[in-house]
Image: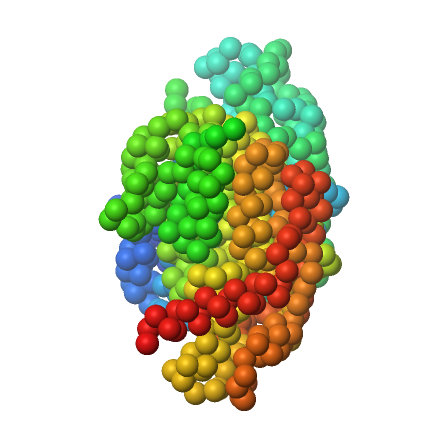
Length: 313
Length: 313
């Protein structure tokens, strides 16, 4: 059934792909972000840190079936550099959206995109939704607080809210401060001679759970349809891969002799050796399973950056 | 050894008693709050939600040995009525204080007063510091976020921070929207004929862990001296008492025939049957034990409100 859906953070990496997916599925998609293309249809600029701006957004949007709330500061070092800003955007932004939804479209479902970072260093693997939370950086703290606030509002019966806790995800178009995209960008730059064949890397021993962004987008659409209000769902592949193995797989795709160098600036403090999700709860509820192979993700990342390099020539 | 100590929320219930205690112990006490008496010495007004006001406070305070951060919205219904405000005061206020301390007095210890509410409904009793957190109202969420942020800053080595998680506490001078003070106030009002002998009560079955405020104040002073930076300590009596038993004990102190009535407005949602703290970690670290009997707390509460009633005649 066709729905009327507002997406915040619509210009972001996941936002753009999600809006395209929902539109292709026949839904009416309203998009908001801090900046939007001039020629965009069904869009409204919004500053989520300003309650009156969020009120104006919801008044503009009219009757909605759902809001998917992606707008957030998501890069940990950016959050560390300006921690009060990340609270304003990620926590107050979510609270403003909830207040406005209660007023303007109280029957709509809110899909809140939380993060696997709420769990901190794993106490056991795979990480399920019963795993204790232990956020260890300002980004994770802001998301924990917003996640708990969503739960509070849903438990009080004030709004229908489903929370998603995605683990690492990547894909063509992701900013190159995230690890896989960073590697692919650098390799593509080396191939066309724009960078010497020295790859800057962070912690290669860490094992993470990576999903293709298209699997994430499909999961959000399924959660909108089949998720249970008040629940939180982990979203991951259920497999972990070391950064080293991802790098090795990328290097086999490049015919250059490349030197790998450690960059201390890319080493996160409080690093944890392995993160792996259980997606059993979400699979049981919504029938979702990861579909896109990790090899395809790497192929698409390299192809994306090779094209981007061509364009800058 | 005499210390120079800044106390935020100095005009609050705990703040006033803490400042008096620290002064009597020979420390230099600087006091701040949103409003202060005109004739007060060593005081500076501060709006903790405004970073520049907090900067000005720390610049005024000069070199400090410690800051005890009590300033907060602590009443759950007030937090529920204005959730963004409670985040501004309890979370952003703490973050502003941390930023200002890093700049103006980076060697000083911060004693952050968190709350037992971070744990939510107990998964086991007594509640120790390893108990998972699960905040279920905006007050608790704001404190969880600030608590985690203090831990993040301490773990990064940016500031010396000790966190205290007090359970219920009461004493003469506490506002009468907290349960024991509410009962004592109403009983004193009945005794002098200012209220008909009908007592408005909330959930009487709930069992809570109550401390006398003087035990709390002594604990904060000990934590300042002996606490370990980066650690969080539960602060409770280790005993739980039902609200019913506290009411019964108060009623034996009053020679009136009193009718007890349930007031739905006093029933908290998501009520939990029993809360009881383990203070073992704090006792092991700082040698603190609760000293003031519960009976004394009840005597003092009634005496306080009897005097207050006399004053209003």
